[in-house]
Length: 146
Image (cartoon, rainbow, N blue to C red; front, side):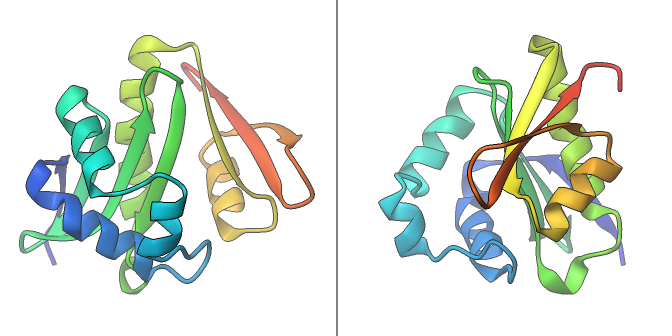
């Protein structure tokens, strides 16, 4: 299986939403994302304005993505289709996002459920300085060069 990564394109937006809604942990439906102000138009604007999203593909099919909020220094999203988990795809996508974040920020940050596999994954990638946001969520940070 030949897995490749590249910058996301406008033509990837539907596939990005398909990946995001396919995950078991931290699942959100399109309707829930819409209520949060996250929709195809918003993502399209983000992709057009800056280098902020990357996709992993197999045979030109999107199987994962990562996305940043470049102005905020935030790793906003990193998701992989469940059937492709555990193959290093998430790691590659997060590294692409980190590379772009650290061009402009000394410290990058993200928020996730403190009891999630994602939290453990990010800690393994060097994210730390854990701060509780509320009863369920934490903020993690990573410094340039770590």
